[in-house]
Length: 198
Image 1 (cartoon, rainbow, N blue to C red):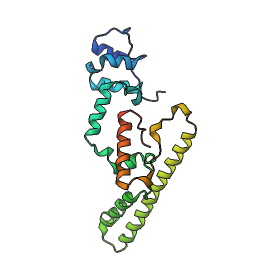
Image 2 (image 1 turned 180 degrees about the vertical axis):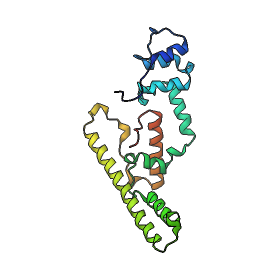
Image 3 (image 1 turned 120 degrees about the horizontal axis):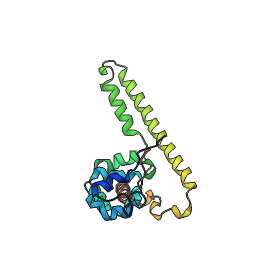
Image 4 (image 1 turned 90 degrees about the vertical axis):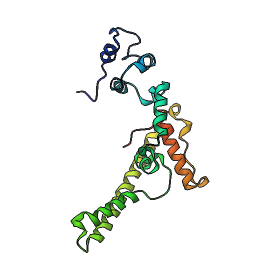
């Protein structure tokens, strides 16, 4: 049973008009192969290399780092503070309550869309649902942080990097902390060390 997409070296080789025994092989030496042929391959074939290489491994290719840098410099919404904090909560060291936005959205939905907001009890229901949603989100964040802390205990020392030092909130303002967090997310994306969200 296959667990995911399978890399097929013949797709890239046939596109480039290269024999199956070409070296460096895209299957066994993908980074070396990409170093030579990255600019010659279309995006739909380049996507296949993500099946056999990690984002961090592909970072050695300047064209890929530059593409990521252009993306980050475009200030995409998914890397802005509010979205990034929800997407990668274990990287944010802030102390504010979690789930406030989600709770407010749930309350607004109950007050405006649930039964058309027509009964006098909807307001109370909206507040209750908002509190429940806020607590669910806060619990999800606590669980993710516990899982990450447990996983970090088993990482060998040589895999630890100095760029993951905890942010000291007392020394910087809230706005500086948010800017620092966004910068950290963007740097991790560029260098291929941004973990997939849970």
